Length: 64
Image (cartoon, helix red, strand yellow):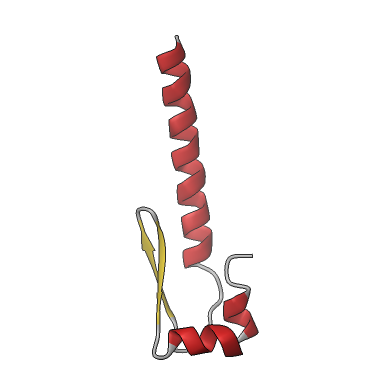
């Protein structure tokens, strides 16, 4: 019985994770920033991405 409950909880958690990943992958980002959905999250890529996180409030608030 516990195994079935654990499996159901894992399936629900996986669905929630995929929903969050899709939401983040579709989020608005500044021009030149690419968002790639992955199995375990999203990957942001851009030139000087670290500096852009400091300078751009849209990136600082990404995912909120």
